[in-house]
Amino acid sequence: MSTTTTQTETHKPVVEKYLSQYDFANLKPYVHPPETKADLPWSELVTLDLEDYHRPGGKERLAKQLEHAVHHVGFFYVKNYGLTQEQVDRQFTLAQHLFELPVSEKEKYECNYRAADYNGWRRPGRALVANGRDNIEIYNIPKFTPDFEGKYDQPDLLKAHLPEIEVFQKALHAKVVLPLLRLFALVLQLPDEDYLVRQHTYEKKSEDHFRYMLYYPRTEEEWAASKYGATGGHTDLGTVTLLFRQPVAGLQILGEDGNWTWVSAQPGTITVNLADTISHLTGGWLKSSVHRVVAPPEDQRQYKRTGLLYFARPHNDTQLLPITDSPVLEEAGVKPRFDKIVTMEEWVRAKQTLQLNPDIAAKRWAERGDGKIEVLAGFHDQKYKE
Ligand SMILES: O=C(O)CCC(=O)C(=O)O
Ligand SMILES: [Fe+2]
Image (cartoon, rainbow, N blue to C red):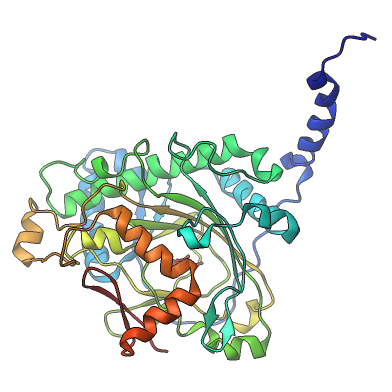
């Protein structure tokens, strides 16, 4: 045995043993709860087959399929999105084990709420929901670009799998978000199909992020206090939100007819919803749809509801003005939604300050007292009743 072993060499076996505890071979695989048997009013959403995107005439076919969905519904599914089920399942497994870590470990990575920084761990129960508390735990991971490098430490569980998380996140951007933006460009008849893509390149600074999310089961009393989630209607703040197949029912969409319908768990799909920023960029023509997560049906209430999401957003320096060279928007006569020029960076800060700081939000909502809040520069959000 050598007597000149270095520090690193001495510790290497220990470190490796420690990390090997996080090998997928040693992590209990995540298993989705069974689907509900309840007969619910399900939303009728179109499903885009992204495999068609690469075939001759495919983009045009898909854009045609999207026309109604993006203007009137704001939600749709995509399938054949270029990641294997095994890759997806492994991310759910990481989510499960991450949330099972003790709070004393997770809180080392807690969000800087006051700085409106949502990356890291968001503890459950911070916000009032009707007369109860929220039941949501979140862990957000920013883009893997120099802007964020070294800014956020991660628990060893995630550190052991960061290369795979990076591949997964980048694939979502390149294989789902960017193709969808090209389809939106076709729907809007923009002068070239990369028009929106250029505002959403992965490398440049923007606040896209990947999220593990957990909804804890609530007791009947807790559900009643929080009005079964009925007051949680909201729009998302970015470009599009990608939500991996979620068999625990709960997500509902507010339709143009004023009725809420449930989003079902279609095998092999991602649910996509359009969000506020793409709506700002089109003067409201592309629809940022109102949705909420309510109490699951009785046969699923005992389950934890684990979510995997990706939030796409344009570059921070993007000005949120309606695009001027779209014949579709011109004909619709769309108008700017702010009364001054607002950048994406300002918009994110305004919205995240409210989302991360329930005390600030409560004060701001109370200012007008009419169920509306001025988020920024004349643009309002509203509370949705049951
Ligand atoms: O978990 C879901 O089904 C949707 C979550 C959601 O609406 C959100 O995180 O903004
Ligand atoms: Fe949402």
